[in-house]
Length: 203
Image (cartoon, rainbow, N blue to C red):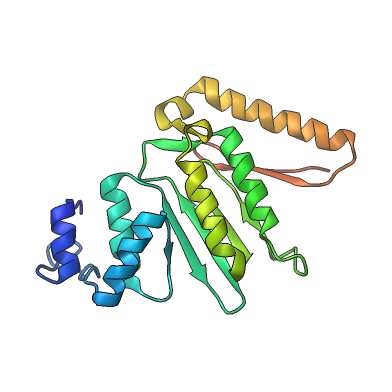
């Protein structure tokens, strides 16, 4: 179901309620006073912290969809947090340079004592870091918001989906593959292609 900003604001205030389909479940969008404040702050800062408030997350996600904005979400856990970026609502995708930048940022925030769990997946449409230090999560989200709003690190999705750019992505992966093999590095290189995730494990 598609919304307008006016319809979303009515749902947030509780003046109307919407359902998934004619007789489907209600879409949780109504916010209390505290949640409204967090919602407005999330829009201003470019990301939301999801602390078990489904209505807040639903309202923010719907706003991103209407305004065609990147959706950046922090999911706090006990000690760590999960950080997600989704470009699906926008007309843009993260460029090769942007993927590199986001990847380095996420890796720098992973816990050093458990590197195997600090796994990051930077991508053109969807990126996430499963385990990130909670104290670094907000700053990382802020930096990602700056990256996705910087024209140097994004590319229009029509150009991204072109054969020319897909060939450029594959060449970049091949070059990195060759570079790491030359130095005997076994690092894994990950990129998100147009239709599927390409994972290359360097032997």
